[in-house]
Structures are given as structure tokens and as C-alpha cells.
Length: 340
Image 1 (tube, one colour):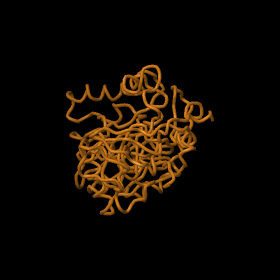
Image 2: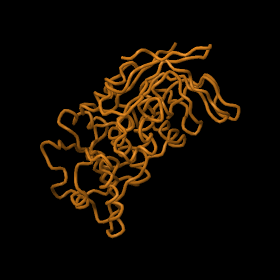
Image 3: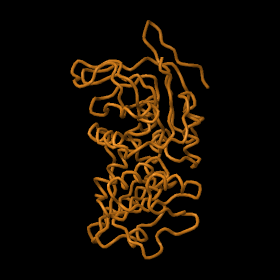
Image 4: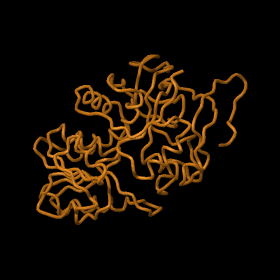
């Protein structure tokens, strides 16, 4: 670990993860340092972060891959100090134009450079933290659960009685998607690896398939919706498993191709969709307070719960990202920060 960055002149500082260049190995590019606390504008709030979490987007921003992300993240080097997005914590200060929030409020949502003791964000990206969740549990929700909610409710349009197939069901988005589809009354078939089948069954899946032992697209089953998170099957096979009016929602699809990283399959699905009776497509998840409040209602009603694989201290962020890349995670990985 490098020597910490310090500040002088009485500037208030904080501990944060720092990334100064792109790299595919988290141990090579992520370190902790002491930085100045972020300032806030009239329409922003400052959150004392109690917990954060990592997801696949963390690695993409860290590595700058696929290259398509770099117009946002920075062409040659990262624009932001660190790739964190999820936060759960307590409001420290509010800007002069902010209403509806006050110092001391417990909140969760998204912010830039969230792997830090303090993060600045906008009120439309946070919501009151569900009372039944710890800060660590709440921090696993925003990016992954919002993606799952938009995939299940808004894009797949799942309703009572629908037959739904969810690939990658044991991951961060998948564990939320299984619960949401079940809560909306669907008959859920979940695809996962051998060691994770019991976990997804406990989330409400009616039928589980071990992809290492069975081809989940072979056979007579047809689905009203397929939410493809794992992203390792071709469009032709997925289309055949849909009902004549079925909907395919692609929310993942990782490849080693450096320019688009698998997004070409998503683009082809959207181009093909007008020429078939089935709806084939993808979407870019949006991070907003309305969705967070909808999720809070589901948590409060007992219809949804986070699945946490492990909790790491902020200083071990690189180890958390490494654990994610190893592919053995069920649910989410949280990062915790001290309350003081």
C-alpha cells in the first residue's frame, strides 16, 4: 500500500479508496488514503457513509473495460477517485436548496466515489433507509435491486401467473430478481450452479436448474419472460424458449471482447425484436429515489431481503473485488465503515 495522501491547512479529511489508473487486478490499482472531504452545492447532501458494496459495475469502472465505458469514466485515467456507487449512511449536511432531508437522517442510495467515509450526492438518488435493514444490508440494495426491479416489473412486465426463467439467479441482481418475480406472483425457474441451488430455492424459486448438469433451454418448457443475467446463451436458443408473445430482458452478458464487452448481443436483440412477435431487448438501469422507495415498501412488507455473502472493511476493498471476480459469491458483498 502506498503512503497515504495528507492534507494541510485545517481541511477536514477522510479515509477513502483511491484509484489513480485503470487496471484489471484490484490489488494493483485500489488502495486507501486520506483525502479532503467532498464539498456540497446548494442542491446536494453530504452523507457520512456507514457501508457500501461492490458489483460487476465496480470492476468495469475500475478496469475501464469495455472501452465503451471510458467516455463516462475517463478516456486515459479515471475521472473519479474510486469506482464505488452504493451508499448507506447518515446525512451529515444538506445544501441550502435541499428539502425533505436533514442532518441525522439514515438514508441509502447511490453516489459517486462511494468507497469513502463521506460522499456527496443528490436528494433524488437517495431515500430513507428501510428500518429493518442494517447499514451493511441496505448498502447492497441500490444498484443491484434497482436493476432487478426495472428488469422484472418494467421491462419483463411480470404479472401473476407468468412463467419466468432467470439465469444468473444466485448473483447480486439475480437474488433480488427471483424474489421480485415471486412477489409479483410468477412461477419462477431459477438457473444457478450446484452449490447455490438451495440458496435460490429459499428465495422463492419454484423450480431450480443446475446449469452444469442440465441444459435449461432444452425441453418443452416455454416462458412468458426470460431475464438473462448470466448472458452466456445465444439469442436463437433464448427465443425458442419463449412463448409466442414472450419477453426477453438481457441485463448481463460478459465477454472478453474489449470494445463492447458483450453488448453486441444486446444490440442484436433490439434490432431483431421488431421482426418477431416476441419482445427482445435490454436497458440501462436508472438510479432514482422513486425506485428506492418502491423497494423500501417491499422490504417493509417482508417480500424482499438482501442476501449477503460476506462483509469486508473498507481497507479490504481490493479483496472484496477479487472475491467477486472469483465467481463464488452468492448474493452481495458489502463494505463496512466505522460509525465514529
